[in-house]
Length: 400
Image (cartoon, rainbow, N blue to C red; front, side, top):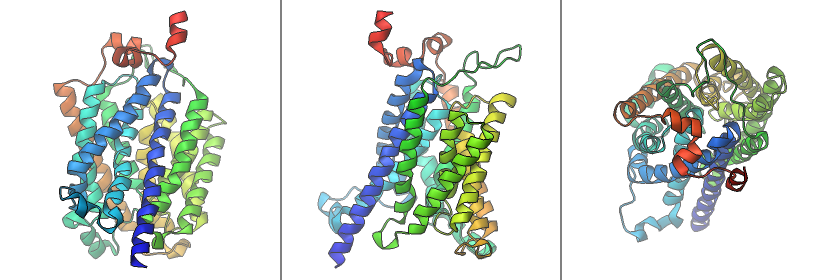
């Protein structure tokens, strides 16, 4: 029976890893559909290569920093217990690699390829796992301090703050240091729309992410005996709540409609295991409203050229999810309890501050040394031709 459980747990978390790995295809197509045609190839290449760099950085440095585990022993020792520890690494790697995938959407269409890969290595090896270890492995004593002072530890079941808020706030730092795309905001005050290149590809990316998210959330249990149908239903309710509110407030705009479910799913990660489904629906609806309102404000009023809206979607909705866990996870509002509003606020603020400072340090150092942006000529030609020497539809381009 013990051997059967070990094998079942390994299979369970492997399936989760595969589902979250598929989400990186969703990141790629969401970015591909949102950017202009001359940057589509770059969107696809970035996500795949960023994932590969993340794997190396997390394997050799990041995973050990977060969990104190390394893989430098013999293959025989690694294969013990059905290789569960290796599969667990694979699963958590897919979370870590979401950090550069999130950032990629914000800095699209004008970022240099090489410096972004260096940033990916630094973020996944050092910045992300430091907070991951704090929140999910009790490192640095912060969780114990929160439990003693606020009555409970910081609770983030599947990463509203650990993954999404951290990625979104790092993305904000990168976007601010990089600057807006050429001609996006003109000196006369006019704003160039830079419309998406493909709504179907944008929608495909959103659907792939939404489906994979049920592996992201449900399989965060990490062992089959801890699987929870409540997590699945809460994820579903938050997804539809985000969709409906974003559709209403976004006035049927397909960009808002397809980012709405993602906003809801980002927000529900933290408290999906402790909320009532009605609380999850409200959490997702509020997240949908946050995304529509803040995307519009940042793009049009504050003139922050965050191409995919990664700060509103991941940074702000992720922070809301961390706080919402402390509200709707309480027994007073139908939740299972065991959470503290104070601990959720403090933990969320620590994650946001760490991500913002880390992003400013990493991207600030790169800007001062190697530079972050394509040249004006390269940006005008597009990242596809400037970096990869081929466009998304080369035959059609040649015929023209």
